[in-house]
Image 1 (cartoon, one colour):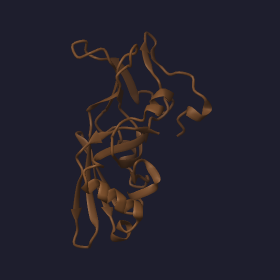
Image 2: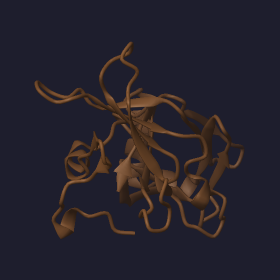
Image 3: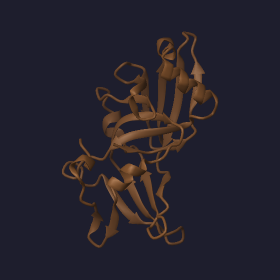
Image 4: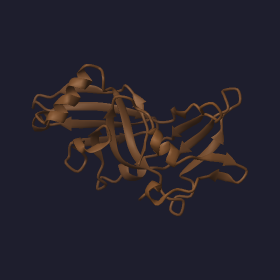
Length: 203
């Protein structure tokens, strides 16, 4: 699973029923710095293109969850339960998650609400996978950054399979996963390293 991140854009509203509606927005076409390159490497950045999540978002039967910290053990809402609404546009993926009064009494949900109110949990982060090249050959590409801006490699994701969206304290790509999916640009195009079976992306 790959994770993207965006700070802010979360708003909590209380409904007459006692339920809480959490509104969030994940903007497209924004560059995320995945790595500064360290002492000898090149910086890596990533961009999620407009409607990259459309395949699963546009299919209501596809289950998508709203979680705390990418943990399926800490759900807040889900599309299958009728408590998660998704709206996809060229600019952003917007969500409205309904946290029912019953869920508000669950300990980890109460902890999240306290953290959110305190301004400690303000990020929105989608969890997704890239479809295999045999099904979507052009799901992603790696290009050189404009020399006027720097010397980073920029990975653009055009199509991805969205499985969950999480609230997080620090929206960022998981460094462990980055090491497992190391990539570089060569004359032959995108080169992926050999991985142990446990490191491969499973779809």
